[in-house]
Length: 415
Image (tube, rainbow, N blue to C red):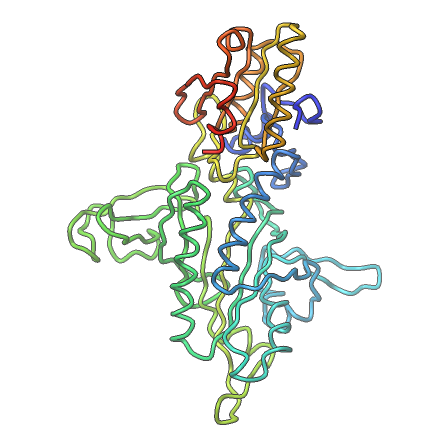
């Protein structure tokens, strides 16, 4: 894409009431637009990042047998009244229509997915299965904060699984756990799994996936020598005590952001809807249900918080809006402009996803915008590089630069 055709522009400053680093940088870079506290629109650059995050999640959920659906976000109140959530979930948005019927805006999908599953799972032969969706969620937060990491409207991947036994749920949980770690790793993040309270979803312990960052809302204790990690609120041991798992190190305390969770819902929701299946002996049984969430917009915000530097955003290659940022410093030189245009077309022909800064502005502005937007690789073509027969290649993360001949640049990028 030519940057001159991109309808958004960078900004020198974010809204004065925006204190979260992720929101400040994403607004300044033209990725999102703030509508009100806790509600953001996603602009072309932001949609590109979000789509890549969603596709990574989609690939990993499909790989473990998840089947994608798209569930309603406008829910009948009757479903929520059956589970008790209508009166007990304080963040639920409630709507009354002109016909005086009551509805809820989905803040989770248990009340919708359970009746769907009930319709198609009549026998033990139909179990287990897992279905998921990637969509919007709504929560009536009293105080939206942390930019896109905690809002009133946000993106979410919800997956639900149904099982004959607790043992089969436990087996599938381990499968999902490994898939989640792959998701975070592919998004450039290092996540830890913690034990936490199940909250309004379940009386059992839940598992949360955390990324260390000062922008987080949770305190955790973790071990450097093994995988032990727990939310401070439910941890049996405190900071400075010996790790109860490996016994090799003392626990450290850190601030972390939740980027995913798993709930063992047991039989709560199936029982609310009278959902049973026939077992091998023809008897009615209630399925065990699991819930697995990843906040897609929260994951995007966390990546900005963790990886950004003083110059701007630093996207991992896997979720960057473009692979390459081609910056042309032509100084009005028509021959150089033509050479840059030619290189841009070659990139497109070779399926290299490129943002081409062809704007007629000062070089300093172009470089500052490139640092802010944070595309992993920047290519500079100028009178100096043209004289030497190539382009300057700069890596956004390390700041290192190399010179590559124009004839070899395609191969260099493809490697």
